Length: 324
Image (tube, rainbow, N blue to C red; front, top):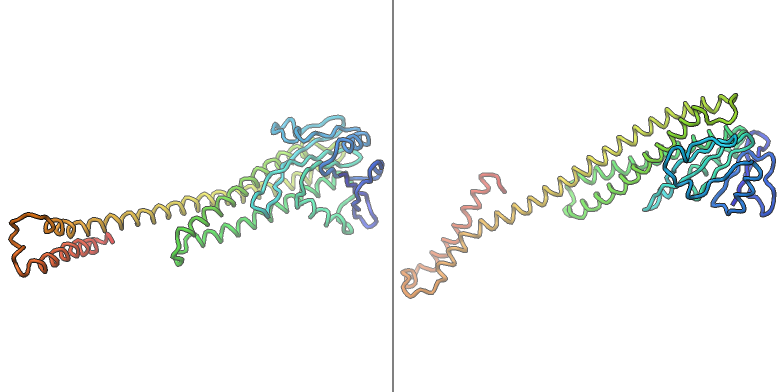
């Protein structure tokens, strides 16, 4: 699907799908390719004189394959986190092709940042009608969305931290399992966010060093350098949250081990407490013919008292040593 964005009165951009077989408008400043067919790729290639990368080329991780200039156009690919609100967030490659006539974006998912930018660009004075301004605005929206995701993850990590160290719930095992599952999910999302920020950082370095196709265009380089500082701040925030997740994982696993050790200790102490009474019962349960206590009227009460004392005394000793 091809969406074209054209300047509108008041400094806004209008968005409309391109009808099948229709040519690309000459005044389009942003051409958004969403899971395009090969025929749609060829249509844009003929209009701008550039080559649209394939999905396999987007997935390449070599910087020279995703950040390069060719035929008067700058090719940049970043990986954005999508499906954040589901149980399976993932990274999706998005390519930006900057030419003198228009900006081309190639994607196969619906990042929330694109929706955020479209809302802003559709308002008066929301975005200047130039390819460079659209690119800078998209990157800023991507960072705004990344900041929102990290903030949400931070709130959820704080809630998991409180739950992890809360001892009021008697069902500790279920709670620990829930906390570990949640921390694993949040840690995975933080990891994907950091990887996404790294690709955006590389893209910004490329933009600020020489990506603009017009050597006289200095605004994009200046905005890229400013956005770069925001990326570094978000990376530090993501690194802090990653270390916090690791700390909580270690602490929760430590608490699980402590609870298991307490259970094993309890079983060990109970075994030691019941060992002397068992020995007494075993002695008087032997079937020897000559046992002096068999004919003694107080033999049975004596055996019961001996078993009780042999169990209570170790228990009191363990309590005195604070082993229980």
